[in-house]
Length: 249
Length: 244
Image (cartoon, rainbow over all chains, first blue to last red; front, side, top):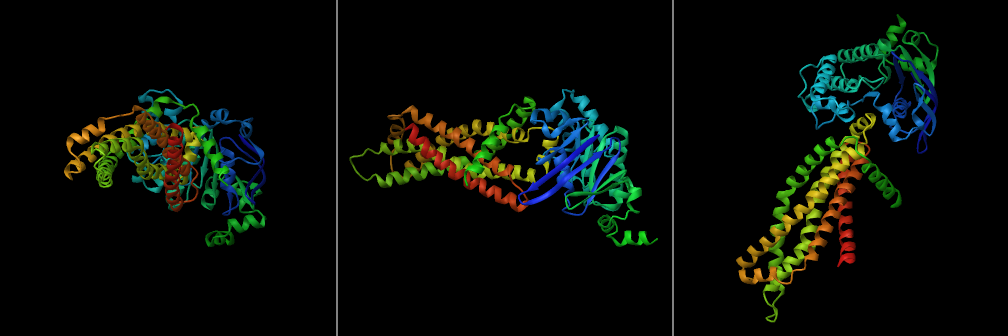
């Protein structure tokens, strides 16, 4: 479980996060949703240590990440897998090298063990045999899947996903969502997903946190989201004509 | 105004020289960078060195019109100016353009495409992994390039001098072998090592703190070259003042 307590983050004059507290449950897909500029990605980056919050704490199973120094943070970071919005694959490495990169850095496994692990991860994301392709040769959906394969290479306890469906067609987006959900259940990871895609919310949002203006505005499940009377959340959820039509039905 | 970037630069260097996670991975990166920086720059260094030597010889001969000065002095001047100034400094300025822009744009692109964030998340010391191999590769290969440059500079001067009949082969050989002070070579190597460090660290700093997109990567690359060149020339003066 990951717990965040009273997270504040400012960039110059801009107070982006205004005291957010929440709990992210183990073995479930925890979604952070909200409009553009609501602070979703900033919150995610504060949680993984890419941004330092001015106030508050991020606690990984009782371990206060915000109070740790670089050396002690490494222990937690090796338990984290992250899929970035643009996949962030290393351009100079092929698919296989991208996946085994963290294994190379932090373990003393033999070449065969590393190759077996890379093949297992690639099979898990339905990309078996694509080992030698370079990121430039992959489609957007394939890059995301390689990103997931790299994220699970070290058997993470915590999985962070930033906008998994951006730039993908609806069918591929569903494939990626289902893959993330399967991995979450299979590995019992605490998965935190930042998205503004309502398909993801309705599909895999076992726990949903809605951010508005840098604050936690609503918390619940995807089943509760359609019946809420929260004005800002309703404006966000039913912004598209498709969702408006569904609401009328 | 200068103190904030200077402080950031020093903090970045501190992170660069943190203990590497795994030396054998860094070793592979160092060899790759040596090939990229050293072998990749050999062609341009060879071309500019030959022409620098040729031009220096022809212009020195043009200015030495007195009959009281032996022609062999042209060879001496070429040798000393190649070792002390032309090869280390001009090579460094050219390498700041070639290697510096490449380092800044490579690291800058990794920054804007979140590849550096990905390294950080994995628990890898990204400044160390990305910058240390480049610095080590540069401070080992650039002095070698400078030695090659000195040789080619003198060779260029020899061909230009004898072809234009500004001096004879015997005068030239007498000139380059007379009154050689080995300390000039030490100064040359000190310059090469310091310039190599400046090129890679300044360019890496510019790339590492890039924010935005492709436009900013281009800007960082340009800034890396400009700041490296200014720093190299300033350091050149300081080294000359301190060592000579």
